[in-house]
Length: 465
Image (cartoon, rainbow, N blue to C red; front, side, top):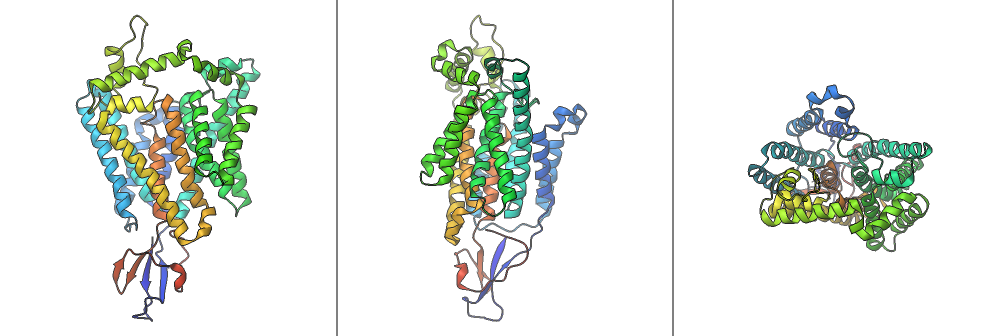
């Protein structure tokens, strides 16, 4: 966090001021805890080593991060009013989940799901507070990219191996190729959403990076790997999400080469990489009545809307959609089984009702507002910032949200970490790029000071952009 103080040798001359960047350690207990959570959540360690399940490692490192945040001194951000809106939105969302869980017909599922909601809200809050400098954002992203690359290469390798063993393209595309673990990477649909989130961030940073050839090479590997894995995993929703990302990039910045390159890269992947089986399944979805998967999901969506109609305010409770639909809105004589809604929008409407849906939409609004404000802050200090990686990251986060929302229309991913990590990262980036707070003669001021109008003294630790 940077502050501007008067030059002690020039009292009464506010023009002669020195900008002093407060030295904040790069590492902190809260930051280490958040990195630990990212590793545990994205490697699914307890799923691979069952002996770790009782240890609840994800909750432990989150509590460590919370402890680090509580005991560490932290300055108020220059944009604290904007960040407060996000906190209020998170609090209202958690409250809506609490109220709906209190009235849920299946209490065990509701309270287990509510614990996950609290964990994700806490992780989102801590990411925004701990990943709050340029260096920390870069480290967090580097780890995030590597963890996603681990799963992307696994899916690409698995698809190639199964194809070499004689599995047909249509069979692989129908049953999909997941990342071989439980949780939000387990099947192709869940995995595809994760890639729709990671791909645009890496792609925008790749075309914004101009200083380091090594970083450009690494970002190129990430971008290509995520896109290839997204296309070959067999998820139709992931392809729709990637198409939405490419179209949004082109429409949002039609004159920028970044948007054009991402759009062309996606088109190239469609014609060269997309398996024939996936193309066939995309064509079959046009006649959804004859497509077994599509027709079943349409039924699930209709049932979800009926549940919302009957429970419009608070819904039926967190994680209660599967059993409520099975027991009260079942398909007659079909051997129906409990199933998730296969749509984030249907899930939130049915389980959380109007209160939860409106609070979630408010968080989306705050997300987009934060990234727009970050870009404005960067441009206000230096027009060259338009080509900086921070500026590119703010756009990449917007596109990642679009990919999440588009692919999430076909799979229930509300209580997966993607959205909450993106929101927390947007808060952290906004704080890292916030303008310095000024102080004249000991009186704080939030007015922006042109940094090029007076001499500056900078400490060795980098602060806001």
